[in-house]
Length: 272
Image 1 (cartoon, rainbow, N blue to C red):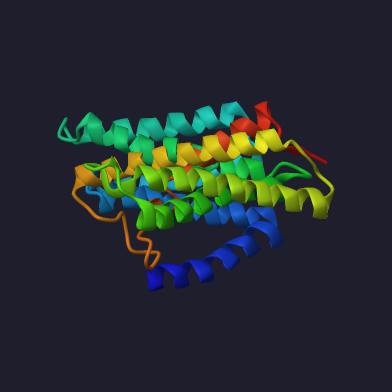
Image 2: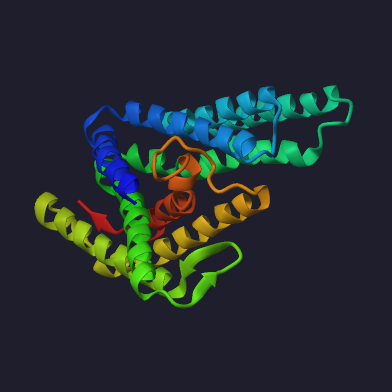
């Protein structure tokens, strides 16, 4: 617990500096590197793919998706990238003389394209002119505050198991506490945005964001816990002391970030 808190106290300010103070390309590169490491964790650490070439292809593709999101490249370039990536994976499958199974190729596609595209919603939110630096914090606030609220509520009030086989420590009470904490965190943040930066805030939308995205984050956490249980591992990695790997720390964000991106389009939470 102590290591977890110390790591968060050091890493969170650094993350805020990268996202809020530095040129946006630095954030895109950072998230791209994180996605490349996440691809490695899923394929190698979880034991799904041991072919180093496939891991490299997936990591490079993951990084490319992040840069594609930053530069806002056309659909043609996205299609070209997926065509090349798919072609390389299928070529490896043919060169293996059918020993490399399609299931492993599919996991590579998830690691190299699906997870990076979902997570890269953070980059796409960040690059919106005028509001990007304000709204990009929403997925982090919801995911991290929900996780903290769920942990402490479950620790002191948790009785009923939420998913005993998948994640034995999670409780129904903890999940409810996480949703409430995330909603309150969102209300506080958007109040600051309103008073300090002159945004007009839709507080009903704020509540919708808090409840829906926190619930989605819990779902995302459970999804990646299922993978860990099937792989027989405790953590995806050990890069972040007290937290595990990239996928251990940002598993919920992979679902929360794209949902926030969708909601920002359908139900704007604030306008300047």
